[in-house]
Length: 178
Image 1 (cartoon, rainbow, N blue to C red):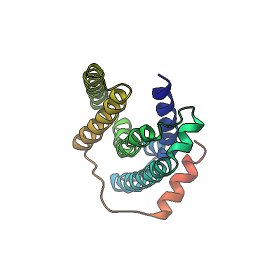
Image 2: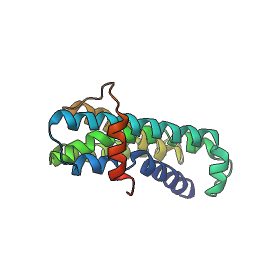
Image 3: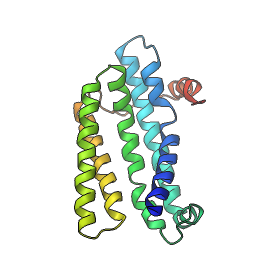
Image 4: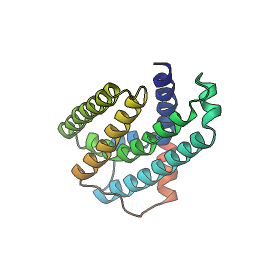
């Protein structure tokens, strides 16, 4: 459980920074049109993805130092593999915010239940096969991958190549304190 707790602590902390509070901005901000909302969603998506990949790379580069800092020397590779969930979580953050904004909790409920079942099945099967803590890491990755695909397919908004630093400044002025 020490390895799992360490991995969870590191990835959860990184996920907080990768979201940068933009999900709350998407839910709470008043938009003039759906086009404005979709522009903000694109900026949020690309920013979250960029930050999450940068954090994952930092974990990968300094994996042994981070593992030692959280009390699991020699298990840095576990942090690198489990860190794959950081970009996956960033990919679902915008869709989750948009579903919350639209009060579409039915889709979010279904996605959470199905992802929990995936985590359970993958983790239990791998644990029974003797995969040790890797079973939980694989279950979490499988669950996050499922959420990424499921929410993207269910969402009316799809990411496209748009970015605005003006929009980013406005979003960050709102969410910077969160």
